[in-house]
Length: 492
Image (cartoon, rainbow, N blue to C red; front, side):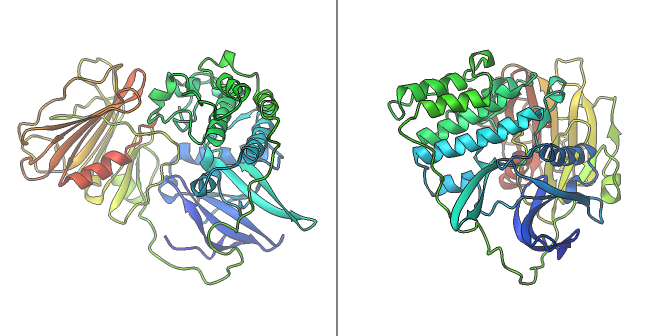
């Protein structure tokens, strides 16, 4: 990815980071003589109206709030290719996740961060906005000097999953990070401020105990959690009681709002007054760097199926809306973890294939995008159509006597993982690999040495309590199969 010389009126210095949906650049505001961060929608989402709207909504949500503990948006605009961008506060002191990699915070430092992020959440809630993705990677630090003394502010960033409280009462995309998300959010229920209070409590548990309360692999596991493990004297008994109340599975048993939780936790730790985390050098390259931008290869644009598009995307394959198709041969199940913003950098020989209506997407080798189909399929034993996507090297790539490669992804109903999967007589004996995480989340079967060479891999995973995602991958080798499997996003 080459570094642009300018974004809008802002000269660009370097890339800060990137994910599946956006890239963030360090730039400079010549008018105000200040560094800024510019977040730009990723190229492969240019034609996806849902992704564009989420990106624009993030800027609007942030503009609603004037708080030192919420990232500020100063400006917004469109690039020449139509992609939106947001000009935001530059967090020169990195993220909480980066700091925790270097070592734990003291109790006083943890209390300070919790109080500041709580203030940011309360400011959002007062403006009718839910964050829905509080976690260490979304807690940013910005430093400044006042009267020669360094000060550090913790700020909430990344409102890509943010919703107004009004919108959260409607059918909406389930999202969040499994180990921090509230159970009602993982179940797709109506939300209020207590969902963010739960996530803040999970963050507080991590900062104060040194370990997260949960290590959920999927949202299904987060939907019905057991009580967190006891802290075994790591904190005063009253502080542990406060955390467990804030992490109650039933939101009616939690604190009424974020300030009530923060106040109770601070009172339970009277011997640990808030203290700022240590000042550090700016994360990454020197902010004053004005050297010429380094050029490099641009990432290949993805294919978005089922949305208005141009070029290769327009010819990706026929749409199947309102009709059914069945995958020939065995089909498998795989979960695409919704963690909002799965960061996989695409090589030139890869394409993102996406069903714009359902949000199902998968990254495949370029030649697999020759034949793409989306729409509905009818799972075995069902009379109802469910969202699905297929991409392969040729029509009928998954027939028993075919030598093609490809992937099929389909949602289907199910409360339990199946005990077996369809067989592949064109392959050698299967190699079942049962992997159980956080409550039997997925099972995997590999069929090696298939006709024409290669493998077929099936992975069976729960997406939600009553929902499965079924995927079959036929690939030249296991490495390619794993890359494709790990890139699947369920769209839920």
